[in-house]
Length: 275
Image 1 (cartoon, rainbow, N blue to C red):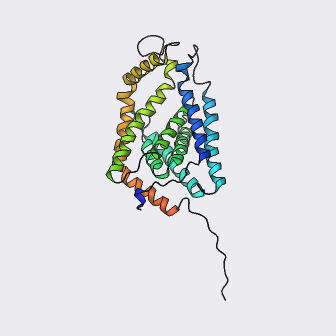
Image 2 (cartoon, rainbow, N blue to C red):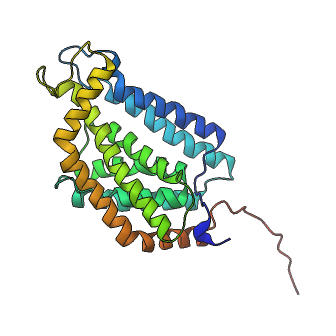
């Protein structure tokens, strides 16, 4: 089987690690959506629950890595080195576009890496990239754990895409890049919308209203404020980067995977002395 048609994974999700990720993702989603169910009191914000998101994410990432390292069959120092390299690249790429008309230069690399190395690797890479970027740019705040979770889900989803190759694969990844752009914008709007949009108008959160009514208001708010600006700019950036750079980057990543021989068993051979 050709390398391009294989689903290579430097960090596979074992049953135990998968369960941890499911539980953390469910808890993270609840942190995004709880204001729709439990109406926040006046003056409430995510400044209070952001530390709890960190408390969920960081142990989960460490737990996955340590569990797989301890197992000795799924992730090794080569995979950790690749994770560090891609995290560094992502941290450097993100400031090049963030803050300018929705242009985001980091997500295409996250999507391609998740595609090549698998969903577990993509999940971890999403969080480490956002965290490293925040350290690099000073962008640490209550929004950071929510950005980490959203990026992790994008990397996870890229690793779960169906098999394809050639132009079909690039088209699949480009379409996913568009969906990921709007997904990220949707989540990052949700983290602050219930607390900052005021008490009047069609775009505002209404405490005590039904979930359906507030979701409708939120969709209207998102379309009116970010869909045709930030989110669309992010979608265009993802598409262009994947179409123009994707084929080359995929080749490089897959070649590195082949040469690093992730998951290859370590064998020791007895040395014989010849006279």
